[in-house]
Image 1: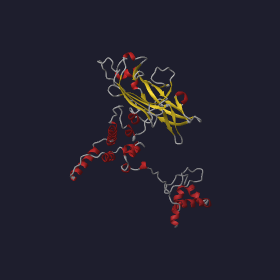
Image 2: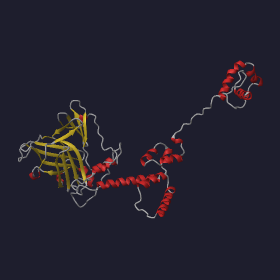
Image 3: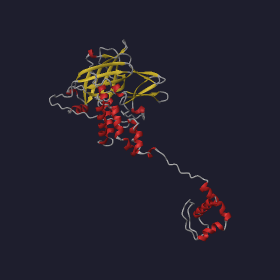
Image 4: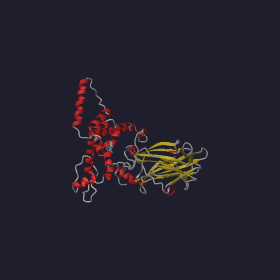
Length: 448
């Protein structure tokens, strides 16, 4: 006991700084530290022998710190990044493709580990199994091992990741093309657009500015609760009459290239449609003026008022005026082509609490095909009918004349209707399309 206590006193005394002003500065006491230089041996011995009462508390505290207090080591900060690369690759091997791509976005270290060919080859082989199977087990095992070794060692990091992504994109395109391959002979559009767009991600199709809505939009009509406003392309906004707040929003989008716009764009950037390459024709002097086909739909949500197809539409050079080609679909003079509208015109709307119907409004879908059957001008927009201010030249109908009008940068549509009080229905007596000559020249390469 005495021997151990003396050793402890000597060790602690070597590390304690002397109180004399001539002594050098010494750091905190350290066990088993070498003796620190001081002014002399007398000063060091005198610090313990001259005032034993003053040093007793310090010495006792030092002994307790050496023998009674256990040494506490700081705990290391453990995180997943400090694990060895082999362990991280083993953990990543249990992730699916989507989670593995997300992990690769954490940092550069995870990105390189997540590109491991062994992991992606396993995912690739599970998703895209070979069609041909080998019946002999020995040859099958030998071929699998050799193929795996060659695929891992002869490829750059990330090779099988790219192969998996490209194969998935090709598979999605194949499924989509299988759905959109059947084409409607009347509209020239795919028949299963809805089924093809169901599993797709979100994509920006159109942007609308709702500031000063009542000034920048077209007022369509109103009922007891809401007032309707239209914004191009095909946006319908309903405002509560009392509070002037948005009650509902309806979007009417045409099916033409809607699949590409809803899948090939991003959440912030719209998909840019590829420009049309004109096919020149030096033989036909009226190239681009004839053999148009029109498919027209008029509906009010759940009710269809008209659905028809009109073929062999043409325009003579003399009918080109004010930068527009005139395509007469239904003429005032031809009574045989006048068409009735089934039902009472109105646009139905519904919210969680209320529902209603705005009269004299409907949605018009226009699909104009060129002479090859390719969609030339397409739109879907809400429109309204209003009482015509012009005098009617019709003598076969006794009733008021109404008009419906639509216009955009590529063309205009004008419809004239007559209300028959006896049968309580509208008759279309005139339907004319005006196509911009700029649109025709860009499409056919002409110069009208």
